[in-house]
Amino acid sequence: MSSTICLQEGDRRLMISRSYVLLALLAATVSAYGQESVFELVESIPEETSLDNNDIRNTSEVWIEMIDQARQSLDIEQFYISNGEPLEPVIAAIERAADRGVSVRVIADARMYKTYPETVDRLGKRKNISKRIIDYGKLAGGIQHAKFFIVDNKQAFIGSQNFDWRALTHIHELGLRIEHPEAVAFYTAVFEADWNLAETNDKSLISSVLKQRKIGAPFTTIHNADTTIFSPTASPAGILPDSTLWDEPHILNVIENAQHEVNLQFLGYGIKARDKTEYHKLDDALRAAAARGVTVRLMVSDWEKGSSGEKDLKALSTIENIRVKFVIIPEWSGAYIPFARVDHCKFIVADGRKFWLGTSNGEKSYFHNCRNLGIVIEDRKLASRLTSIFLKTWRSEYTERVHPDSTYAPRKHGE
Image (cartoon, rainbow, N blue to C red; front, side):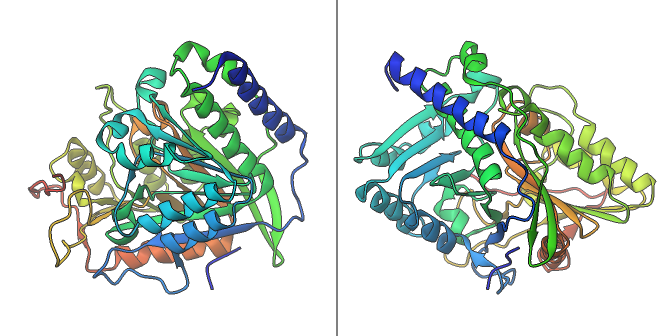
């Protein structure tokens, strides 16, 4: 049992109109108090490690189940698609959906498409499947980094898992299956905006594609007599259907309201941004939490060894009440696998009560320049389970304390 609690001008106007209708429905919908919602944690575990949780289903099983349930529409937005034997059953499920008449749309990031065009092109040639390539470099100075898909506008999957064969068997990942109409409608509105923008990748069209509407979040639901309060979130701030649901302030709020402990896990973390500016909001929030007596634990992948972020991690490790660790996933016994054998999870959980889970890392560009998604949930059962997942890694043989005086050699992880 899982842990549950490019178109012609006329066509473009039609798609933009559809986005407006979705947002209007969002604004008109009353918060779903009393409505049963389902949130299912979903994991990927690197082979030959002891990080598996028997009560949490694996990514490929959930993805195929969701895709096989599609009857009308399947909208997929990914950083990239890199196919291999573990992912092929998922790709085949998408093709089966198209074969039974499901309308499938695929969006991929422009930069990564240059590296991994094959499977995106394969899908785009299939009947009932359309593809578009979005250039967030032109739109916002970043990348399309979100990893999500939506089935029949009823359920969505978001998380750290890329559509990458390695993400299924050789990377530690965590995601969330979401079944809630208003939350899914928000993610659909994000997808519609990107689908329209990807037609031309013209920054001047952003204002015509987006129409700001308050969707009524946070939502409150009751499940098995437990109350859950949550808000879907996204980035960047300038390309959102509801600007109040920008990731950054919601993430900071989770940290700022922590009373006892806050646990954070990212692939990467750093103050120095890609645009050469410095970004202190997240770092300052952690320091402020520690100063008021909150225990702060931060885990990042060992890919940060030798990076500019290493200095920032070392500086944090000197602060009272803050502990920092690298996560080191051993290489696979079969062979070296580039861009794999890493902890890629992205989440923050405070006091075993409230958490954020999403697709961003702990760096400025993910919130200010890149497309990313997330969700903030206040639910003791789910938050406690997430805390236990964090602590399982924290206490495992796969972590190493960051020491301010140590010298770390960069870990090879590329080709």
